[in-house]
Length: 408
Image: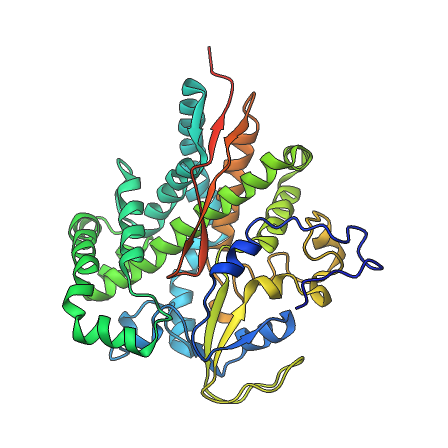
């Protein structure tokens, strides 16, 4: 997609509301040899095709000797469909309202009270606490006394993991020649994760099973390795992406008071539309990978051949003018009403592997921001720093200090 806007179709020609685009451009490093897809139509064709398999997230290193005990993130076809159906109950509208809304409300009452008492706080840390509280409920890990311990540990494990886009030489050095040395930090953290968080949850759920991930794994007899992989998958997706999304949305609102006011004046559907438009401009994860098992025709490019590794450029697809309309780099809360495409575009993926927890994340973001932005005197005192996570190819928002009027 060309980084230009036709002034004849875009009244905001030259305006670019994106905050992370240039930062991502400087840091993104696609897998070597990957065929990069940038158009929305071609991206959707690939992600919805039954002829592709997962190609990212270290999927090449997953052992499929027992598919029943592999995270459904790495499964495809019928095994994936069955496993996804088994977890669908965690993400239904009813579950979001009855199970997660009370947790969100309690957490926000605590966070806003603490913020009013101190008059200052770090927004991304507050968002982390909310995302952690919801995630431990989904997992069934009873860490509510210190949910941030789990979140910090998951982040450390992810940071210590080898980069999925390593070259052949680096892979040889890190995995084979000096494998013991490079694996040691991650192995230590992973043992801590299992011993301190998963094992206590297993013991509780054996006595009192509930509708959560740990209960399901206990019922199905998952191995230790499979339990770690499944909890890591849910935990990373549930905590990290939600935290960054909330931080980025808040940054947009603090920088544009009229946007903040529009958000506060809108009904629930209108608030979702604003958040979805921010996510269109600023998707947290920038690339999705698939491996083609057979040829796939492309609407705007040459066909994909069997064996090709395909990288979906989410940012480019989200800003494909043929799909999203004029002024693709500008914020437009009415964009959803002007186009016939799903409001999230490629932000949460597409096809069978579309993020199952997308609606949970949107509800967390809406309720968090609605609570924070209504506080008297709320303002951003320090802009956040953007960091880059090479493992997930995503930005991170850190250190956003906010102030509000102190309670009397």
